[in-house]
Image (cartoon, rainbow, N blue to C red; front, side, top):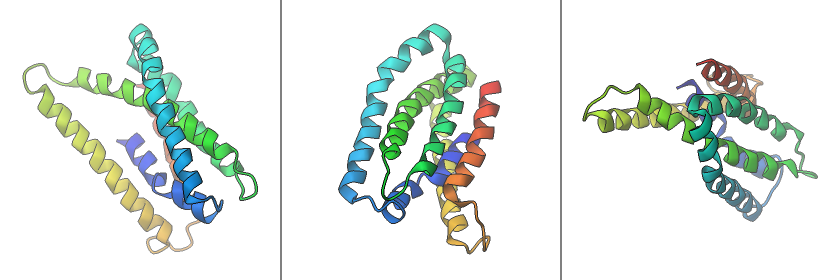
Length: 173
């Protein structure tokens, strides 16, 4: 819940930031996103072995804090030098794949036994998606300045502020 919400706060604004602040072309942004997806897809097999060996919870504890810290790479980019953007997106894709692989078995293990497990999994997935949707909507409202005029934090700052405690909470779980 908290993790999905934190991620959704900033997600809609990465591309906006690249276009408006860093002045990166649409083509380059697309290539960066392809890199992130490729890193994610390529790392699924890589994450399977440690998850099988050490368990989902242990691997998740290792991945959450670096995933939150990777977001800090965004603050070091400028229009004249944005070399860390593909690094941040690539590492984010790599780490997100591991996090996704860890979370699903943990949730599945919490479900009651019986033939209703698929229904519960579907409800969990729908709830996680709804939380993400609400957080992206909230992010738009927060960054419009209409909800809290003069708010200085911005989507990325708010996301990092929320991600680190969420990661710590989950890591202690």
